[in-house]
Length: 89
Image 1 (cartoon, rainbow, N blue to C red):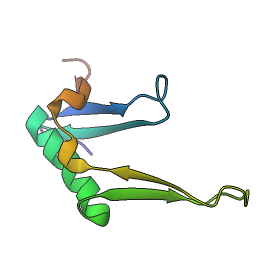
Image 2 (image 1 turned 90 degrees about the horizontal axis):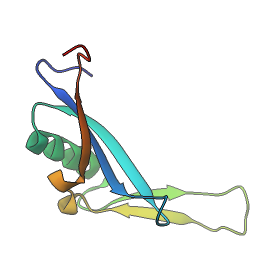
Image 3 (image 1 turned 90 degrees about the vertical axis):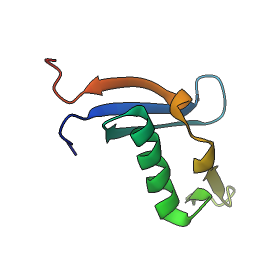
């Protein structure tokens, strides 16, 4: 989605190159602060204050795997890149 005068903000939370979990997201917004708010809002709308993603495996030996997100802990420190929608600018 493109918003007038907005930028794409890429969030990196966790790094699967160095640890067991990596999480990234890209948000279109007019500022760093707005991008954080939009990401938090999107996560909170899914299940409330703590979000979870559950996977079921076709292999019965893995009964479940659940990943939890805590939107309250996301802030502008987690933005690792930004770009204009118009790459010629």
